[in-house]
Amino acid sequence: MHIFLYTVFLSLYHTAIRIAGRWNTKARLWQQGRVEIFERLQKALTEKPSPIVWLHCSSLGEFEQGRPVLELIRKQYPSYRILLTFFSPSGYEIRKNYEHADFVFYLPADSKRNSKRFLDIVNPTLVLWVKYDYWYYYMAEMKHRNIPVLLISGAFRKDQPFFRWYGRLHRYMLECFRHLFVQTNQSVQLLSTIGVINVSVAGDTRFDRVSEIAARFESIPFISDFCGDYPVVVAGSTWAEDEEEIDHYANTHPNIRFIVAPHDISEGRLKEAEELFTNCIRYSHLQSSRAKKPNVLLIDNIGMLSRLYKYGTITYVGGGFGKDGIHNVLEAAVFSKPVVFGPEFENYIEAVDLVELGAAFTIESAVEIEEVLNDMLADAEWLAKAGKAAGEYVRQKTGATAKVLEYIQVNRLLTT
Image 1 (cartoon, rainbow, N blue to C red):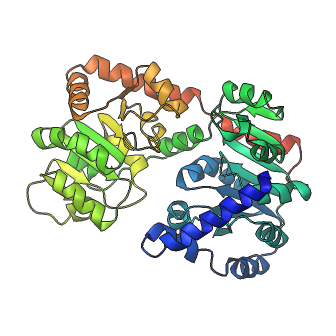
Image 2 (image 1 turned 180 degrees about the vertical axis):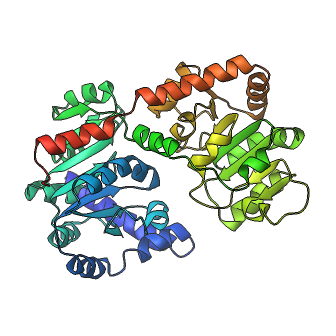
Image 3 (image 1 turned 180 degrees about the horizontal axis):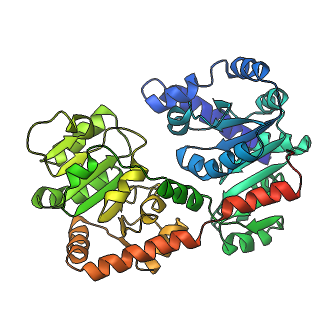
């Protein structure tokens, strides 16, 4: 019955995607990226025959978690080719030319036939699954073929289907993993209640990733000049709801520089932001502008954000006013910057930790963010203490990548 219901769900989901693709760009990309995917996959892998390590990510955020492990495998096991797959267009479209993977594809839709066909072509030596995005037929087929699958940076909560009366299918998918590397002891304890014991706490590989980014920091042209000697607020991965909370403060404080990097940089969203911020310029126009520089810089490109936080006196991370929650606060914290975000953060362990440490602050309105910014900018000691706590937190949490690689080496899952 569980498999029957799951199959019905997949059918309904794919139907909804096809219908939405008529007007929704993301749904259309999801479909187009999977057209003749097996033929393209077969051709690509045939041209470069050698054993494969397969890394799967749902989207861009999960890619950043899997990336440190992937790049270390690339360095230590150069004889293996690396296949990177994404479920979502927001990951694939940005990383389809990622230089450290030999192949980047969408994951074909889950079905019994597709999973068999995909694994017949790829025949991976090792599979790395990042955080979540569990698909029953793929998991079951890999277990049947005895392919080792490792979960990286897993995070489990008691409200997930694994721990509910109706979660037998989900629990079976966990049984398909050779080992699960999770972020916290709480996840270990939860999994033990359903009999999953092949688990260890490695932490979150994102700490390794953001630490590497900080260590390799390179300045960004024109940003230092824009910031000058002014206090700077860097607002990253913002949605319209975030921008509506900070626009009044930005518009009424010309002596503060704001760098705003929207999560979505489509022309429509950029124009929305420009309407909110009255004294604003796009990054792409910054060099050519001869006018007096405004106090709000709107970032209209992808790939710059993780370095932008370095320039902030205070940072703001978006997403906290939406149902999906905040984006990556570690990218800001690694630079020893205090972090501010909206109210939807409880499901993000690192955000909860930072709030408890006094390194991050949550707000629910424009009034509250103005109070936080005013108070911090007026108290240099408080500002420095919060930033130091953020940086120390990140430094103490690194090392997850090394634990995953140690397991691979000890268990001889790959050979040099």
